[in-house]
Figure (cartoon, rainbow, N blue to C red):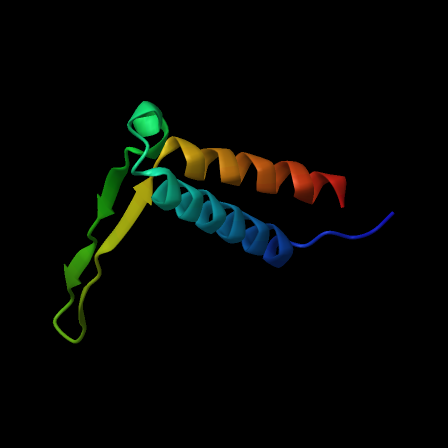
Length: 81
């Protein structure tokens, strides 16, 4: 039995998400597939001021149905390793 690690899983997830986003971008001109290519932006902005250190981070995640399909496919491929 092969040992799978978290780094490989993260790589598969990122590549699946990226592939789905690229496909969605290519299919954007097709009006009939707009339900697959419409994106939702998730925003997370943690910030703190601790007197000696201050940080402000903003993370935007852009999701659409095709990118979710890419993530699901990546998990399926990872499990088949």
